Image (cartoon, rainbow, N blue to C red; front, side, top):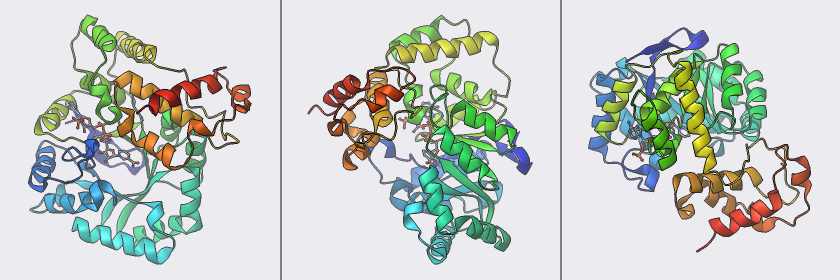
Length: 378
Ligand SMILES: NC(=O)c1ccc[n+]([C@@H]2O[C@H](COP(=O)([O-])OP(=O)(O)OC[C@H]3O[C@@H](n4cnc5c(N)ncnc54)[C@H](OP(=O)(O)O)[C@@H]3O)[C@@H](O)[C@H]2O)c1
């Protein structure tokens, strides 16, 4: 296992961090944990050198923290750092934050949490946390020894990310990043910004939730033609660890073979390890993925807000992903959210404000109609 220094914190962490969100096929909707199996997976990872474990209050119907707490008995707690998270929707004042943190400590059977994160925020989520006094609460809990580091995990635009990063004295940040998300969410710009500020970055969804482990045929052909043979998972992690700003790459494993495979890979990957030819390969791989892309939306959000509330970048992202990875839109979480919130393309009145603003000059109105027809077909 390679270990990395976590930016300004100066502490060491295993480059591979185990995500505790996907035990027992949680990705496919089965959220009942096989406790014995999950505990053995967690201990297998720690015995293999993993020192960073990531969970959250809400994972696996609020049972992930309980299982992690059990796995960390028998001397395992002392060997690792734990990251867990506070969901903004469950807290509204200091008393509710304190009650939630105490519940998490009880579930995890520990007297302190190492990395405590405001969970999955964008600018709106951050404003909520600020309004209820979360930054001061986190500082007080640091002084009280209940948490060690004040952190956030992020899902939003680069602009939101830059704003949040500069708006508080953060100890660590967790972002979604992988070779397909270079210009999505915080993206490479966000990673480099955090690096310049010496704020350690933990990566989630490094395999896009597992989707990058299964290369489409045109991508596999590129991997096959390269002189050195590696699995798609190895290419994806190698590319991530090549970035010096990355401290930890999380991956949620569901099988012992995946843990062992990742332990093997993270034994070999370091910053600056990729040759120009390898970097070129990954650019070609990205292009091959994009060739199966339905529309060239980069998620820049210049088109937003839509006057009628259509989630334009969200719909195009789902449309692209379904085509790339041949998934069933019926099970797409993002699409379900868009439909539940009434932000679907059925709200579009064709005013064209989006097309006037789009720097890619996309035919958004027509694209939305095609996307919606395909995604909502019964
Ligand atoms: N804070 C937030 O908002 C947030 C959001 C998302 C995730 N997270 C955290 O970040 C962690 C990592 O994200 P993630 O779970 O999406 O990571 P990921 O690495 O992108 O995806 C994990 C999935 O990749 C597949 N996989 C992993 N190793 C593999 C291997 N060696 N060979 C083949 N397939 C492999 C498995 O998919 P299959 O199960 O399909 O085999 C696994 O479930 C999560 O577990 C969670 O703790 C946080």
